[in-house]
Length: 298
Ligand code: ADP
Image 1: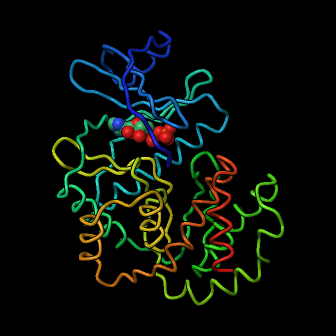
Image 2: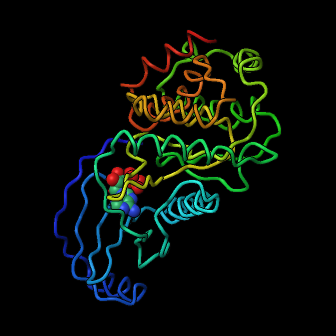
């Protein structure tokens, strides 16, 4: 969800860890290249004679849970056969280091055609539905925990599992005052008519421009998801939060899904969640955008 500047630096990896990874791959590693730009974890390209691999690693106590949730998310998108995800090779811990090891995707700059493919394939992903909103396991948004407790009603899910936990966290951190925040029952009443008649769709859950890759042959890949079943417009809202994915993406998306509601009102309501997450992770620079949506709708 955060901007990244990409460059490669040859990295001298701890030899025990290198050996551990070689054992998993059953191949000799030629080199580790440190990729700058991973906001949360350290990211590496691992080169071998036959293939290249992508490794994310982190030493925080919750990192293994984060990587396990990411793996589960990538695998659940993969199972839909609608859009590609990098193949996962391992999710494990070595000494105090947790890591996620996957196929390395060689990328190119997206063309209009690639963005159309991404739009079309995302619309297909969103056709994967469920009886309830949420998921049978929790995950993370950035480094913050994200509850996926299941609900039958979308408004209840979005209020209880998305907006309220972030609003309460922002108040606890002193990032929002009581006067910034409308009463919880007022938020609920306002959301009721806006969030009606929603089908639970499988979402990427954190779809900003750093979370898709276009491979050299033009295949779109989704990475770093925070999946759950929710309103498909949540993913669209996130694509529009920091500038949008371009007209070819949206044309292809809506052509493939003519039934989609395209409600601009919902877009801002859904962006509110991501802006609250940014406020809680990065602080006051997001305060103005959060308060302006709170005042506009509630
Ligand atoms: P973080 O969760 O720390 O932000 P990301 O999963 O977003 O880390 O990865 C950091 C960067 O590495 C991404 O912006 C992307 O450009 C690149 N990347 C991620 N996964 C792969 C992959 N499988 N192959 C090639 N590059 C990748």
